[in-house]
Image 1 (cartoon, rainbow, N blue to C red):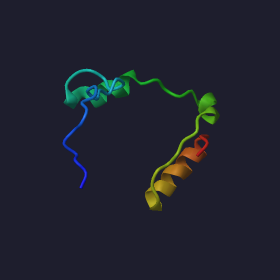
Image 2: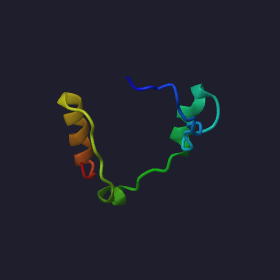
Image 3: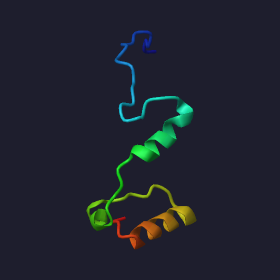
Length: 70
């Protein structure tokens, strides 16, 4: 049986793209600081919908109608 007692400690994980501040306020901070997609540039972005069923199909159809490559 292999011996798994030896391990190496790496660098701590850090999400560098997450906004700073209290967890309860991070989503609001992200929404107001995020860059918007210009309607003329929607064809330049490719969107992958992960999921199947009615919700995934509806999300893909809605994004395709808005001009994104799905």
